[in-house]
Image (cartoon, rainbow, N blue to C red; front, side):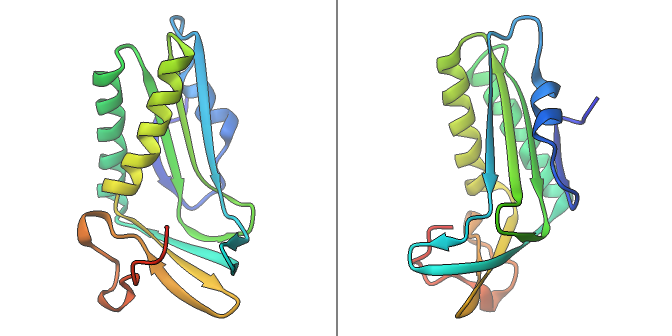
Length: 155
């Protein structure tokens, strides 16, 4: 069985993450898959480079799972995020939640991705056709002091 939370350099199996949350009282299993897109507004992305403080990031992913279980009773969550160089269309993150009803599954899944962006120490360096920049300002931190985004990036 797959661990419920993790940071990996390997491709993520959507099927494995989804199967990890299925249980007898789940009436809904919802999976979110975040991929690398080529265009962000008018900028062409060539590839992304993700970095993470792995141990802390995995602890924060577990924390998000605990928050979801407390908020939506009976919910099982699995979250996996990939780090390293990712090409266009590669899977960067997979979130699966299993709940009794579909409405809670949608709410819990949305909550998970928003919390990841808020508290998990994962950063990405976007490599564009005309430059590059580190993105990620969780709790005011960036991986390198010179990499702080200008504020006009959506991350």
